[in-house]
Length: 81
Length: 199
Image (cartoon, each protein chain N blue to C red):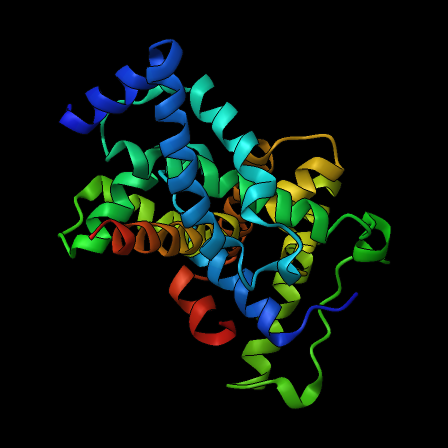
């Protein structure tokens, strides 16, 4: 199966972004709630939180879950007001 | 960073009898409300919030002792519920997708000529290098994982279909990326060069 131009771009982007201190999915999951709250409140991200941001940019699964989490939190926050 | 909310929820959910039952009921309502949004318009609406909230509650109660208060309790609980829901949606969505059909005859780098951009010779050189590195420096398992993920298979689905786990597959792919980057660097290409030409 051939890779499309977009898939090659994705692969190359991931290769170029690879760093030795990248977080794993579980590392990210452990702090994603805190990250989501800070993002929703518009607070500045600490260095540790920036590692989460980087993981989200590189991991489609975690990124998809993060977007879903934000939607869910917005939903319950609206209801709680 | 302890919060009042942590004390309240954890204490009530750790209690027994009516206090616990009431807390579980309240948490269930919150999770269903949040998950309804999560499940809507994703993966063909195959999963409803009610389908997964019970599993999520079991996981939350099982992990209660690990809650550290870094976020609100309801946020923490929702992260577990969302992951439970997303995992089920992905599992059902990719249930009938076989690894064989996805991987086919392997990963090939043959973008259509009209898709090429930038300096054609430089681009061809880098694509040749990328192909060579993928073929010579990655293991079969790494190639399969990278291939599957580039074709849209989520990490955890690949893990399930290959008898692995999400963290191990992420590491497998991350190691593959590091090898490819190292290979490019050894060939004299810096990350920003390959990004500029191929990405």
